[in-house]
Image (cartoon, rainbow, N blue to C red):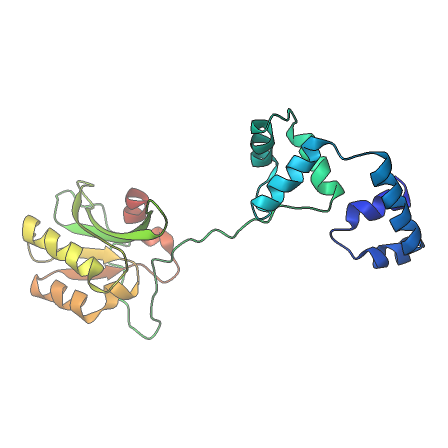
Length: 234
């Protein structure tokens, strides 16, 4: 590869004058070589189609989607050739950061309930231990829905749920209220969750107290403490 070709390949990433200075090439000589090269060999139509498709899609298409795009236009080219064109022009697809909603927001100033499930055997009857969690669901057309679920540890059946567009404090308390009304568990029911702010809210704790339920929480930063709920809900 000549110095001129190296400059042409890196021109989209590093300024031309800086490349010329490093390779000890006069910028005027490089531009003269480039003009002569463009005049001597016209760019193939499929390469033009690749660059135009790349620009049209805001530089976010990789070789797989670019191949489908240019093949739909009648250009029979593969991903390897498309990759070479992108590299020659210093083009690289931009990868947008994926957004994952955060469902647990704990308050370190709030005292958490102990984990009452540690070292305890699995319940042998329903309505003895309920575990809860919040998960997110993608909406058609964009955005998210938030689903709060309560699961019976013994039967592994969902006993209560609620879904909303946001995560207010009463998202989990409403799901629990529905479960308590339908199931009518005896006093002493252990209600286990993580340390999210929805579970430490006053309204949620009052609901537990009115029905004689006992609150249990995972240890901070330990996702395995609530694995029974998370594995089923997710």
